[in-house]
Amino acid sequence: MKRGIFMKESLQILCSSLVENRKIIKTAFPLENSYIYPVCAEIFTEKHQTAQEERLSDCRKILKENTGILSNFRGITKPVMISMMAVDTNPQEKLRRSLSVYALLKEYFFTSQYLPVASMAISSMAPESRYEELSARTRKIYEAIRSEHPFLTNSQDCIYAALLALSPRTDEAIIEETEKCYNILRGEFFSSNAVQSLSHILAFLDGTAEEKCSRTLDLYNKLKLNGCRYGTNFELPTLGVAAMLPGEIKDIARDIAETDEYLAHQQGFGFFSIGKKQRLMHAAMIVSSDLIDKNNVAARSSAISGIVALVAAQQAAICAAVAASAAAASASAASSGN
Image: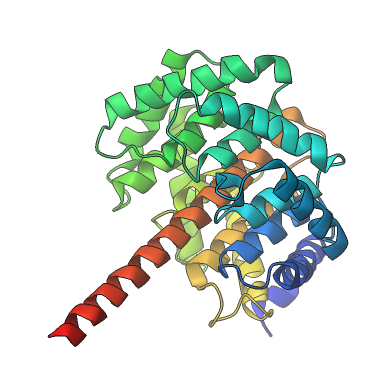
């Protein structure tokens, strides 16, 4: 029998929701990158909602009416933005708040595809009275991060800087925590950039640096024992979110492994869809949705950080895929020219 057959009923329900939401979203956005569909599906699943084509269409119209054709809200993350609007009780107001934060962030950052995600995070977790303060703090934290790691820090880090700006701790404490996590983990994974992103997520979550890093490494190793090799590139931040879920690491690893195997046999998550590492990342997010107490404020922050990390990971994956495709096309053209 397949291992996934023994998974918890609550996880099966969430998996079924993810698969169903992915089908609906793919129908609503038929020409998007395949990586985007499960991300949007997870946004609905995390909220225990089922996507509706009519509502998605309405939110698309709202987005079109309130943004220009060249707006980053209508770039590669457009379906994500629409999905985040659709799960809100007031999509029009959700967009208005996000655009308000976005306008403030543009005073501190060059415009990029990552700023809309940062603006959605801030607008989801803070009152309007704090938007200006948090936008300025996001830049300040970003500069501190870049000062520590000038060659690793790029425009994607504005997303994590926005999350860290929402922390009640001082800027100095945040950067110190980030650096502690980075120094503990940098020898454990190949990609320094990915470790930096992971350290940002861990710094946002509760606990000591030592505890958070220990649980993250423990989860990574226990997943390997369960036959699952978690991705060590842009997937790492979501591993940190899963590691800080309540419960024993061995139980979390088992749940992720069983969820991953279950998803492997579902349409859109098999061998010819998003790949093993991507699927395992979504399995971790499903387990997160199952274990996070939605009535707990700290847990809500963890849920937001998980979605943000997931969106950032998929943006990185899409950009890498586009770059690889462009490089292959260029090499092919050069070869033909010779």
